[in-house]
Image (cartoon, rainbow, N blue to C red):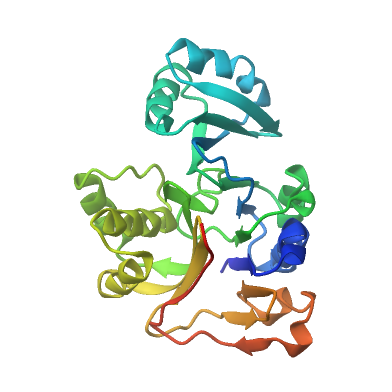
Length: 299
């Protein structure tokens, strides 16, 4: 079943309360997906560097990690640990080299995301517990997406939780089920794309990354996907400067959006939005089937 939420700030006040609003929205969707939860938040951009979000079931695995990377010639400058996740700052262009070092020397550490602004946190457990573990309510940011999971296509694990990120500063959460994801996974791997789980959402994210690497923008990639995806789904996609929404041509999964002068919000159900400021005067609508919606801010 699953629940997805998203919030895009148009004003400083919403940016300052981004984590608090998204946490409340995520918790409201708990009964749609109580087995795991996760969120991607865009905050504190590091121009000239990149942020690498990593995860380990054993937080002690982060001890000495900067030294491992530096010893392999990676310019790793800072690491901030948050429970089972850590944010490592690297010189721009070094995240793939860091990935190779970790795969060889520290295979117990997995990469969640990379980019200038994105940070992804996800774990098994109730959405409220996951939110509290990483202090989501205390975070500010320009925009964020979240997901509560009811596992249907793969095991209940941290790596199977959403969001999925398959390109710098890009992520995707998904409500629904793709029926041709196994074939798409094989085709994308043949094309050289890295896909690490059995989750159909990672396949959708990798597909969008692949199309964008071919020169399409996000809107074009989403529209092209309408011809290639088979199933029923609602996608919420985050990029460094905005987020997009797409429902399949049948649009059987619930979705609602709201927009004010201060924000754009998305929820699987309207009750996820009811506590947002100004919701009583917001423009509220159900996204149309097979229609791309996208909001963007200056980089």
